[in-house]
Structures are given as C-alpha cells and as structure tokens.
Image 1 (cartoon, rainbow, N blue to C red):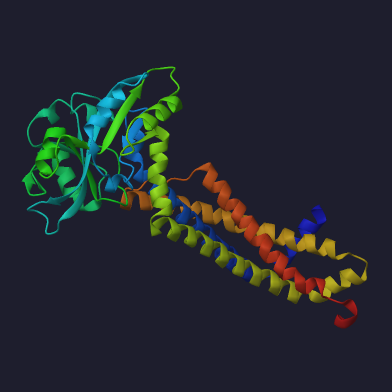
Image 2 (spheres, rainbow, N blue to C red):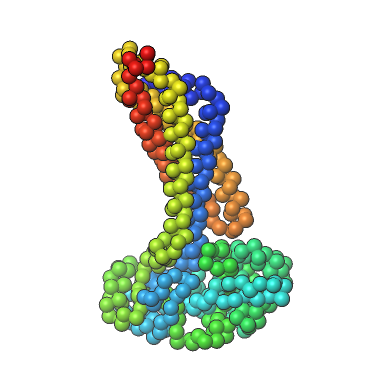
Length: 384
C-alpha cells in the first residue's frame, strides 16, 4: 500500500503548477462549504439565544405562533390555570413585540425586538439583565443589547460611557439606561428589554390580559412530559405547551422549514461540493490521460484494474487533504472577521470540521471514480 501511495504522490507532484491550482480550487470549495454551514448554524443559534436563556421548564404559547418574531397572543388566564396542575411550581410571562426605533441622530427607522418582562422575577438566565431589574420598575426605561447591528454602535457607545439615550420606540420616548449581551439575529436589528408596564405603554394596542409567552417552573424530580400531556389535554386548544428544549426546536424548525434562508445555505453547501468535484475530476482525468501509456504498461505487466483504481483513489485522498488544510485555516480567519463585522455567532466546532472533511474526501472520491472510467477502458494493445 505504501508504494502505491508514493507512486500516487509522484504522479501529482510531477506537475507542480497543476497541483497548486487543484489545491487552491479544493480549498475554495472547502471554504464555501464551511461558510455556508457556518452561516446556517449562526442563523439557528442567533435565533434561539433568547429561548435558550429563558428561566423555565415548560413554555406556553399560542399554537398559531410561528416564531419569536411573530408570536400570537393568548389569554393570561391559561397561565393561571396551568398553575393549578400538580407539579407546577411557579409561572411567569413575557410580552413580545416588534417595534420601530427612531432617534434624532439617525435618518432611518430600525426594526427592534422588544421584550416586556416582570422585573420582580428572574425571567432570563442573564446576570447583566437581572442586575437592572429594580431600575426597570421605573417609568419609560429599558436596556439595550450591546451586540446589536453596527447601526446601533453610536447609541451603545453613549450608554457604555454612562450617558443615557432617549430614542422613540413606536413614537414613545424610552430612556435606555444600560446594556446587556445576547446578540443580533437575522430577524431584527436589536433587542430591547423593558418592564411589562413600559411594554404596554410602547405597544398601546396591547392589553395586560393577553401575553405572548408563558413560563412554567416545575417541581424537581417531576415527570415534565407527563405534566405537558396533562396541561395540553385539560386546557382548551388555544394554547400549546412545550418543554424548554421543544421551544428551542420550535424556533429552529421555523427558520429551517418555513423560510428560504435555511434552504439557501444548504444549497450553497451543495454548490461548493459540486464545484470541488468538478475541479478534482478535471485534475484526475487530465492526470490519467497524460499517463495513460504508463498505466497501460502496468496492465500489460499483469497489474489488475483494482491496483490502478486504488492508486487513483489515493491521489484523490491526497488532493482532499491538501485542499482541506488551507481551506480550514482560511475559514478560521473568515469566521473571526464575519463575527466582528456582523456580531453573528460564527465559530468552528468539531462536528462541522469533521463534516466538511468527510464531504471533501467524498467529493474527491466521487471525482476519482468518474475519472478512472477512462483508465478501465485502456487497452495495452490499442495504446501501443
């Protein structure tokens, strides 16, 4: 096996320029797959950051809700009814609304996601938010996500320096007194958190009796799935009860199945795979064609097709590794650059690194399998 690998290496390195071009082409395909998968993962992670941080074991929503950006209302009475079920320890609620941010310093209105929480309870597992709970009890105050879109950087800088700002949210002046960190998403430009009372002042058409998200804490050592079934079967069908993980999956499913974004990133990954396959095929096919006489000589000497096929597949494996290494290294830099520019959670992980490596090897093997058809057809008598 080692001498076959050595021979495959000599075949590839005989034309250094061709090998360099092939490596660059495969690296480009690797980067393309990495970036598409990275954006897709960032989409799902950024869309579920709020969901992940909710202080709840069970989540109650309107079954017609599609995602956090489009949560339908339901009666708060359902939440109090759920408190009566055995095993439910406490309840909480969250108001969700998509507002318009307007500031004298800005010429454009910005879409901003607003959450209304009860400042007397711990709604989110984010210490930065919880330290402002007492201040959120004041009239017309709110806190802003510091990892918002770049357009909000001047406002964030002012607040970070201790200077409160007072933009208009849906036409009402709100004093931004502090910052926290959650992160931007594809759905909105920024996230603003305020109290329930202030939320209802911003969204004048909303009423206190209609909430968007109900949070339920379950007593320890209780069967959560049993409680979900009990609540879901006993209460009217105008509510849906999910586990905490189920609520996270609910958001991911929306972006994956009901929007074009998930499809676009998947298609981009497929296109990268196809581009790399074409590049490797051209290299291996040309290599086989240029050395067809040598291959025919080996066949005339008694070497079987399987021996030559394995050698071509080894060339494909070498190309895959040579292209993957620089592609992986460059992707790390691009991830970091994208994270700084967009505030999206772009980061490499072992699962994605392994997946792209597997796709790269598969891509090269498929190309090699197509290229060796010419080798299998090579007849020593015809060539000589």
